[in-house]
Each structure stands twice: as structure tokens, then as C-alpha cells.
Length: 219
Ligand SMILES: [Fe+2]
Ligand SMILES: [Fe+2]
Image (tube, rainbow, N blue to C red):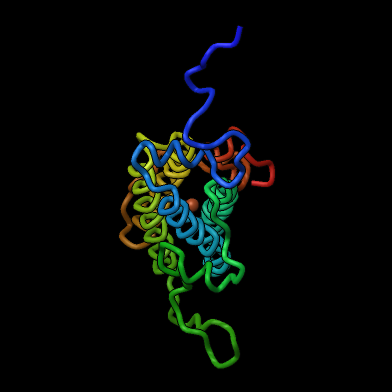
């Protein structure tokens, strides 16, 4: 005998593929899924551009192998953060901009550029480039990421457990990253011992929180 099941139907008509229950349940809980997904695109724009900029920053820590290693962990984990959240954008009926310039422009954090001008030959003028200046750029990029993912945690905590789970995983790693660069900058610039409390990842860019469930094997 057929009986009415509480969740057997809802606001979306059976067979309707133009509307997603996965988005409507978020709206019913008070968060606009369109606004959320646009914020996610901005946030992963910052992860993607940071991955690019950290490549340059890491290389210019020439001769500082320990600093390079830590920067590489942070760099690869930012790529993992981008990979983790991309499918969520599409689930919420968004898409990545077709033009990468648009994507970079809307990133929610400043460009983490090498803190020295380019010279006439197309390279960097490294004559006054100090390691501590690079470490400061890295630290401030991590702080922007912490603020960004904290905001997304706040937006989704009661309304969207799936996005919240992703954001809090990423936030865990961003807090690791801030602690790493506080330790390195304190020592390099101020001669202070300011431990992160961590050791290097087991493998470069291990991403222990954001990929520990392997949402996406390419991450
Ligand atoms: Fe990140
Ligand atoms: Fe980071």
C-alpha cells in the first residue's frame, strides 16, 4: 500500500531538471544559492591566482630550501582548494568565467606579486629583493584566505552543510599556512622564535583536510 512520505515530494516538480532541490533547500534555510555560488567563484579565483603567484614567490626564495618547501606545500594546497570547490559552483548552477582574465579580476584576494619591479630585460629586478619581503606577501595572502573562508563558513553553517564542510576543511589548511609563515617571517625578519607547532607535510601539498576524503582524485 502506497503511503505519503514526508520527503517524497517538495517545491520542485517531479522530473523538472531546470531547478535543483540541492539549491532550493539552501534557499529554504535562508541563504541565496546564487549569491553563495558567486562568492565561491570569487574565493576559488583567489585560490587559483594564488597558486600561480606562489610559483613565482617560491622560485624567488632562491637558496632558501626550507622556505621553498613550505611555500610549495601552500602553493599545491591552494590548487587543491580550487579543485575541491569547482564542482560545487556547478552544482549551484554557476560556471567558471570563459576568460581567465575575468576570473583573475574577480578573485577575492589581492595579487600576491613578487615584491619587486620587473627590469628592462623582462626579468625581476632582484637587487633589493629581501626574503622577508616575500614571506610577508605570503603571510598576508594566507590571512586573506582565512578571512574569505571564514565568511563562507559563517554564510553556510546553518544552511548548507556541503559547502560548509568544504569551507571548513580549506580553513583548517589556511590556518596552518598562516602559522607557517608567521614562524618563518618572525625568524627571518625579527630573529624571533615563534613556532607554528607543525612540521612539513608528508608529501608536498598533502592537503590533509581538503583532500582527506578525496572528493576529487585530480585535486
Ligand atoms: Fe587556499
Ligand atoms: Fe593558503
